[in-house]
Amino acid sequence: MSMKDPAFTFIDLFAGIGGFHAAMHAFGGECVYAVEIDNNAATIYEKNWGIDPRGDITKDATDTTMTVPKHDVLCAGFPCQPFSKSGAQLGMEETRGTLYWNILNIIEKRKPALVVLENVRNLAGPRHIHELKVIVSTLRDAGYLVTDEPIIFSPHLLPPSRGGRPQVRERVFIVAVRKPNSTKDANGQLDAPPVNNQPVDNWTKMNWDLKKHLPLLDRRRKVSESCELSQSELWWLDAWDEFVREMWELREGKRLEGFPLWGNDWEPIETLEIEEGTPKWKRNFLIKNAQFYSDHKKFIDHWTKKWDFYSDKFPPSRRKFEWQAQDTPDLWSTAIQMRPTGIRAKQLTYLPALVAITQTSIIGPYKRRLSVREAARLQGLPDWYDFGEQADSASYKQLGNGVSIGALWHVVRESVHAYKEILEKTAPDLAESVLTSKKSPDTSLKQKPSSKPMSRSAA
Image 1 (tube, rainbow, N blue to C red):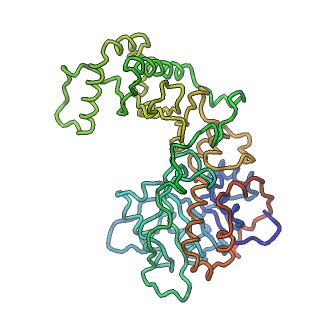
Image 2 (cartoon, rainbow, N blue to C red):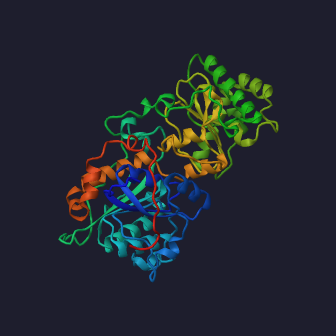
Image 3 (tube, helix red, strand yellow):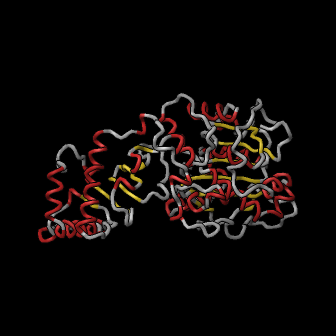
C-alpha cells in the first residue's frame, strides 16, 4: 500500500483471492481486515496483497466478540444460506446461524458508511425472494438506505475503456448507504438501483473480440499442459467440426438451428413416439430433432458411422451439441464449452461465465483451453497477479468463485455518484476518492501495491 494516508478503509469478507480488494485498492482504499477460510485461496491472497486473511468470521464477529476494526466500506461476496421462513418476522433473529448474521453484527457495531454485498444471480430469482427481503429489511433496521430491488450487472455490458471484460457473468449486488443522523426516512428506501443490466455507453456486446480485448496470449506461446485437449476431446470436436462444415455445404450456407441436437434421440419423424407425461419443452425438442434427422438422414447416418458416434468413444453428453455461433462456418473457429449437458459453441466474442468446475472455455482456433492468465484477465486481475506454484485446477476454481473487478468497480462508482449527497456527509474522503476516480480500474492496477502489516485486532 502507499505510505500516504488512504482515502478510506475497507474490510474484505469471504475474500477469496481478492477481487473486492483489487477494486477498492484501485479507488484508493486500504484494507484493514480480510478473512478467508479456504487455505489455498488465503495463500494466494496473501501472496498478492500482503495480508494474511486466514481467520474465521464466526469467531471474530459475534454477540460477545468484535475483533473487526472500524472501516468505511464493508465488502462481502457472501455465501447465502437459506434463512428460516417460519413466522412473519424478517429481523436479525431469523439470520442467526447463517454467515449473513455475522456480517450484520459487524454492520450494527461498526456502522460503515457503505456496504457492498455480492452474490449469484439466483439471489434475485423467485426462489430466493424471502432471503432477499430479509437482507433488505435487516439492513434498513440497522440504519441503512437500500433499494427494494438489487443491482444486477455483467462485465460484458461494459466497454473495455470502462473496465469491461468479454464474459457473461450476471451477479447480484446489494449496495447500502448509512443514513446521516439528519435523515428522517423511516423506511430506508431508495429509488431504483443506479445500475441496471443494460449496456453502458452504447457498447454493443457483439463488438467484443477475444484476441484483441482480453487479450488472448500469443498462440505461439507455450501454455500449461492443463490447457491442452485430450485425444478423446479432439476426437469429439473433430467429429462435430466435420458435421458443422458438411452441413454448411449441404444446406448451402444455412447455419445450424439453435436448438440442442440430441444425437441419442435422432429417429425419423414418422416413427417418433413420445411418452405420455413428457414435459412440453422436451416434447418440443424431440420433435425438432426427429424432423432434423429426417431432413438429413443420409448424411447423418454416414457421419455417425464414420465417427463411431454410438460407440463408447462418444459418451452420451458428447452426443449433445448446441450451436450458438451464428454464421461461423466451422467449429474450430468458435469458442467451445464442454458442459455436463453437452457441447456448446458460440462466436469468439464474449465467453460464458467462469465457473469453479471443469467447464473452462476452449479457444477453437488455438485448440486449447483458456489459460490461467487469460482466465485471470477475464476477471479483471492485472498481469502481475501471481498464482505461485499451485495447480492450475486450484487457480481455475478460485477464479470461478471470484468477482468481476470491472463490474464491481462500475457498480460502486455509479452508486457513489447516485448517493453523493449522503456519502459526502458520512464519508467525505471516500466520496471524493470515488467521484474523482477514472472510469476504469485498469490504470490504477498496473503496478503491484507494496504491503504493510495489518493488525487483526479491533481499532
